[in-house]
Image 1 (tube, rainbow over the protein chains, first blue to last red):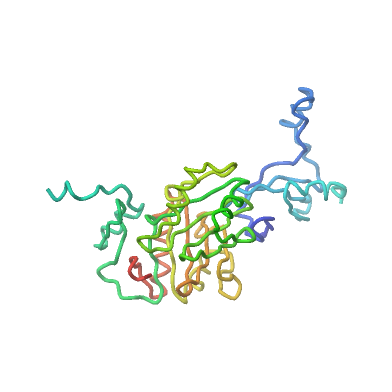
Image 2 (cartoon, rainbow over the protein chains, first blue to last red):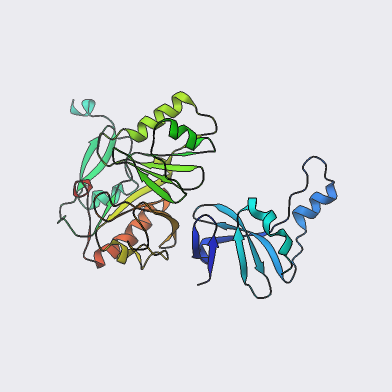
Length: 93
Length: 224
């Protein structure tokens, strides 16, 4: 069984988690164009390589972020949304 | 005449019909039915007890900790830890701002009801009550073999040397989302709380494992 480390609950079997899609910062709710919202809502980039994704620990409904390599399926790290800025610089690992 | 003087049963467990089929002796506390004992109960070393009709309440929101602190409640310092209160009830911290209070099993335990009363009276800012007595079923697994028994149903290591008194695991037990809380107030015990809709499923699975370890379902008297 693959293990994923939940920032709130610690290491758990991957079967306890739900995938939530790619993470992208939300456009400015006041000043963004319709095109920016369409891009945000409907068009994931789906790259081959390191991607930041939403995951949820189902037992606690706790949402967090995971940096995962979509080629090797290696999970580099998991962290809370408020820590997203810390790891933004090395997404291209 | 006697039916007029008896209070109506307003709350019974999701497992009521199972208890009834086993010939359980019930006790009425207020308008709530509780299982006292089963006819074939023999003080087993490993026991499973349904506490679903016992008081419990949750509070959530960024103002929760400040409000509970004002009420002189002993607070768990980190998420997934529980703090025992002076009256024996248990406050479980499920996340940064969500807490769950389980009563002390005594019939006169007032703390969950008292906190709910204070919450309704004071309406603390950014603190919301959660009706955990309605949303979750509550069981307790007691006995030295409890950790060994749980190892076949739960991927989290619940052995006493790894999972300290007061620890909480919110995880999957027999593929059902369950809150597991270790509480050593009266020997090794694990509180298990699951969604009320899954109670009968989880109860049957747990009871099968308990029986394999020589244990039994017991009523409240066994725990007191």
